[in-house]
Length: 304
Image (cartoon, rainbow, N blue to C red; front, side, top):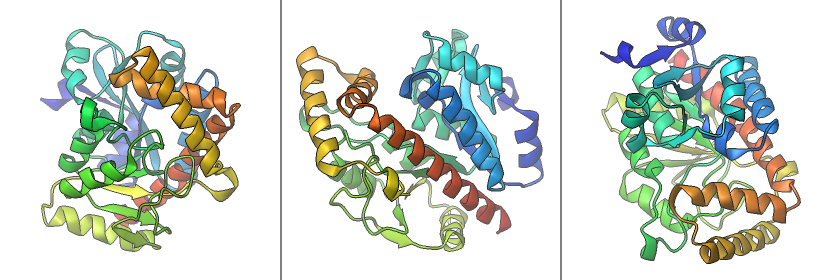
């Protein structure tokens, strides 16, 4: 039944069949997260980093209604330039398939498709979460409920700092999703290494982390894990500078009535201009760092 919907790249299929490490990568960063040509260059470089660290990259998207697990270079280029790509989360997948549309997958949708293909590790920039002011708007990312239900380990640089990080962590705790700090006691906030909030467990060894992940799923404890891997210090942004930029961007979004799935792309674009492009460079570097750690984790998991 799944074969009807899933199109797995031969390299990815071979690796999965042979039990080799595979790392899932999302595509929203290509179509909605970065400008051209940085989006293509970053996507290709991330795939290269995954290979250098012993795993096979599987960038995930929906093209012409097909769930694609592993993209060719021309498909990445197509996603990067095409303006009519749907930002696809869980609710969108059936309709993007039925209408034969192109969809760039969010964290939630990438987790779903990775899980269908049998991929256990997924690398992204930052997870979605509870938006600031959610007590009025109820704006909570579907990424969080996906993490509660889908067995994929998500390596990220924490949650995007435009979110309410305290409420995001509370939500994850309620859903029983472990939040692990890789070599850190503090949950990182995407552009910065600090957020003022702790993690559930600090892990300094990827082998130990792999053992814990395997135990979770062996015991049928459903759901994913958040592996928070802080941005490298040399690319970290000033905490106050980024928070001031976020406050200004949030105010403007509110004044313009920007809501729902349009919020994050607007805020990231605004923050980029307010920080004179420094946020884009930080964003790229943290994704590279996550790709390195995620690939090594996938290798450790495949060794168990």
